[in-house]
Length: 144
Picture 1 (cartoon, rainbow, N blue to C red):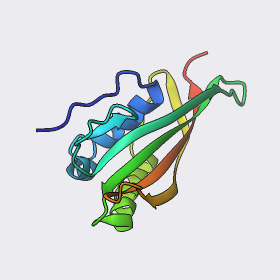
Picture 2 (tube, rainbow, N blue to C red; picture 1 turned 90 degrees about the horizontal axis):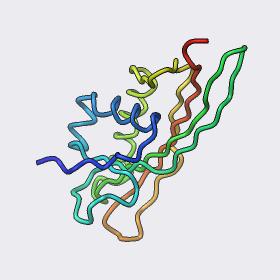
Picture 3 (cartoon, rainbow, N blue to C red; picture 1 turned 90 degrees about the vertical axis):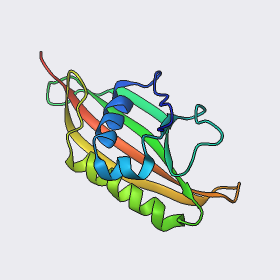
Picture 4 (cartoon, helix red, strand yellow; picture 1 turned 180 degrees about the vertical axis):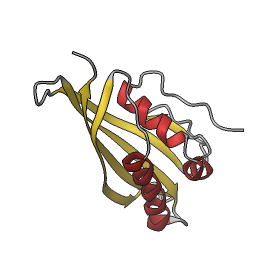
């Protein structure tokens, strides 16, 4: 049975990223619908899973149009036996989906979406490996 999802306090960018990731068969097969906002992950959640972290969004109009620029951090957590290769495999799927797939934010046109792997490290608990993924998005507001 899939774990309960906890994204109720998520902003539009986080919800758009979440929807795109969970529409991908390869990602769903890996994380089995286990995605949580930081601080809401149940203690005994099976690995691997994804935690949504810091989010930032600011207005930034260009070319006479209104728009936003934002970042979203995701942390990929895998079992230490899978280690860095498992983090990189899941990161590759995340990058593929977000940079080539349809990510939609209501009322906005995505101008640029870039996914970066910031760091991979062994968790101090000795049981898992984490990879921090940062998504950068620039969008224009639809309409006048």
